[in-house]
Length: 450
Image (cartoon, rainbow, N blue to C red; front, side, top):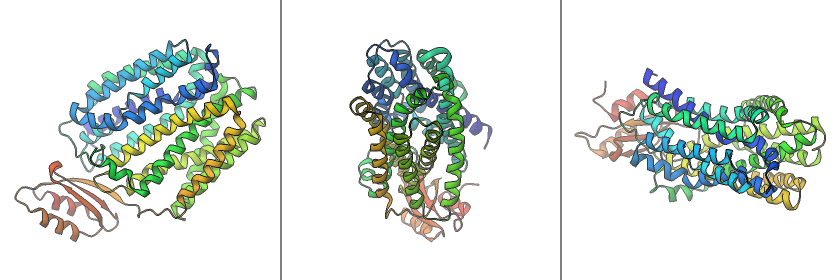
């Protein structure tokens, strides 16, 4: 990568990290600290935890499309401002409904699509995957870091302090986007980055993608269920909120080791068998949380088991969506996937709050276990295409015939699928890595390049 790409990747990764920290840091602490509000109820807690997911789900696709019209940076900066305003409202809220409103406004800063599109704009085609990988690492790291920082900040500054820190982080990112992130010299082809509203209905009708969309909805419903009740379980065992990070740290480290082992085993077996195994780990964990909530070491073991299954699914589901989506339509497929993901967080908050309020936490855990077992049925008979690599190549149509280009692409070994989009001056490829020669493909797409 050149200097511009490195600077862009690191600065956009930092922006994404700060924003996701702000969304997630509140999750491990809100259910405990919200008890100080006069209108506290489990239903309001669930709504407050999940409210950001509703606004994210609604705006994820529109904000990405809007960045094509208004520009990437204006949309990102506007999203960060909305996020900061929501954080400040939540920080000074004196009631649960106002806290929930703040969380909802936090979610209106749905800038994921614009960030990824800007990352594509500032990177060359042959370096784009590296830039995206750096941002992806930041996204994953933000969740783990939030579980440690949330309780630490709350211990010294309370819930208001957590939201104030998130507001400051968002505001710090604005000059970073304005001055540190390089300006895009040209718009990269958007089919594999941004959603296209003309493709959405087709993506929604795909049976393979439907299974994955429903799966990520349920997955984030499950993680929200956990954080509506797990901190209460820790507190009931004598662990004050300020010490919860001591519990989360070994849980996450062991779960990462467990996920790595699952991935190693998964290379020897069909991928759907490991997906089913992950769901049974989560089901067993929920059963254990229902049955052994008052036995500390067993509780910890079952939480590790849950996060092992969760981490495996969280890492593999988006890769499967990207693999299955047709060439040139990954942006639309991932936009729908992200909307389902955030709507799952909203549902998890609402469902958990209602169940705890009316039936208690034990039924919540048993119901979650049952859902995981039923959910595994989605992956029996689930077939994936072979793991393929994607390329987006610049296309030079000057003096050339489209039919001839198609014939030449069909003749190249290793190409599984391709889509030519003359309006974008781009060709989208899905290829088998061992048989494919990228240099020949680039020369074919643009004979005049050096």
